[in-house]
Length: 395
Image (cartoon, rainbow, N blue to C red; front, side, top):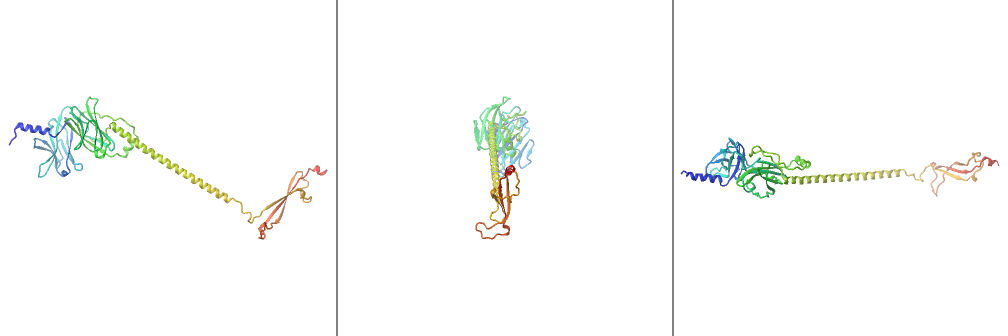
């Protein structure tokens, strides 16, 4: 039974509006559509089709056939359970309703999402310059959504919660929303995600009123080079994104992460922490080095003192009781000296005379030990004689 034309028209309108995401793209541009599916559908065929009615959908591209057909291609990431569809070189006749579908063998196919694509020759009502934005763990990313329609601003995670107003959190990550105007008097809805985590890698939706635009955020681990560069670089203001000649949503992979004000604050805080850690490490190194030097000096001083003590002990005189030849001297006044013993009777000056007599040393202090041959001692008798002048002697 054929449907009445008016009823068919109503069905087409309902199919276009109900539960469909409205996406606007400029003529000649491109766009990527993400479709998320359940764990149970990993091994199923997925396809992208153009809606021809409430229950009629014409295949455009499938995952079990060549994965591209004309201007459309499809890819399936079973690890993330997301298949994506890319449409390029869009023209006005491409405006239509499309569906993400999972094929169910022996049953009714499961529709994941419905999109209504509007291809316009002028500037789209809502667009982003890049659908692919990347950042590093702990850093920030900024997404600029340009729009001309009216409605509430929202930033939503695919299949998750949304942030509206001016700030909020998504999966523990801070999100801020601002509304400004750029140099070309375009209204800009700016989204900044700070304190990125690895699990923030996902598809998000920039939404203003009924219009939406998918944006993919990729978060990677920070490399050693990036950490070093962050410590040595100076703080710079974020450079605003410059619009391209054509406001399309060409999916471009980029390594440059746009930074917002909060992202800069996060980098400054991280940099100060790294500098503190470096200073503490240097301080500990100085303390340890000083301790080693002090210990080494104390050890050297102890070693030098020990050497001096050993030298002093070795220089001590031998025991006087040991057997050595000793020279003794006896000083005698002049009156005990005889004329016959005066060897120099004619001396003019006062002369000190010394007589050396070889004697055997007797036992000392009651020692019973007999004198040995090596106990021979030379004794000296020193007689002091004061001679007078020769003239006085003659008198």
